[in-house]
Length: 408
Image (cartoon, rainbow, N blue to C red; front, side, top):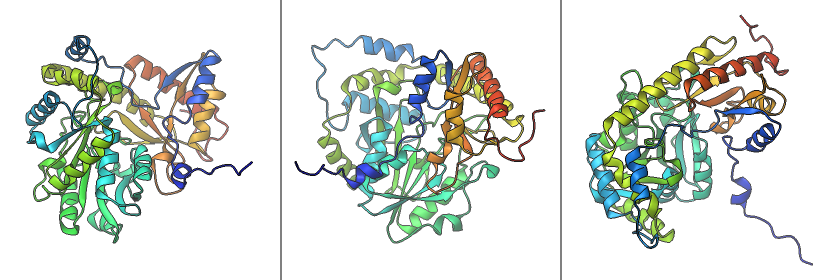
């Protein structure tokens, strides 16, 4: 009998998701009769717009056929109109539909970098960038942002210090997952200047574009001047209209060579989901009042969570400016151990909370060990209860950090 076949180095290096890796503990907690408030994953409970669901129900073809690799023409037009209304001019030829925003990021990293090339990211960052980069063979080079600064970008020198001979792109997310930071015009213009001067692509994940609070507005990468040939937007409908499961995202870029490469990647996977695109063609029928109401709702939820955490002893948190996440530094020895403790060993009245340990949102070893990401995607009463449970768990946790403040 021959030796056991070995898996690839890529398979061994592929990271597990800190968002989902504690799922078995949540299953056991529910099996034990606990109610678990899931704050670990950005799954909105906001209803999908009626216009989108009605169109989905109206599908009457005899079968669900393949579509064009770049996307259904009707949906490409719907996206073009959406961007026009958002003040982002784009031709249909600039848009490529993907299977979720995840495929968009993977395709772009694969198009701009060879195995061994590098992309700069700002940590903490969306943890699945690690997985996409591993699949593409691209190494992520982190620039650290600090909670004390609201996770805003450091100065230009700190960014340029990380640029090396194999750097091909800067990857940024605004509004940011996991921190909720919305980068200012000055910050985005600084990145554009670096990309222009150093010959790099500037890739911006704009999935949470609308979710900017307290009067802020997100600055799209496609509105920055002088980088028209190297600005790349990756986007998704998942959170915007609460359709995570239809797996529809897209790339917008005016660089014809990059888009030609992306088309070849898309041809290899055939086409994005036909039924999801069919439903999403109703995007233009969704009234502005829908997203306006969603933004108000998330801002209220943010305030519930932030006010609870900012008043908790030993907790460091900054008020999120957008998206529906925040990162919090807790008075604990290890966020993963604490998250498992919540699910396996703790309950308050038969209830507990599921968090995402933040170490997986960093590329620098050792960072994020005492931080968690919280997705405030539950209704206000549930969030208020979840914060009560979290506060009680911090007091009960045996690994509470030395010197942490007692309860007030």
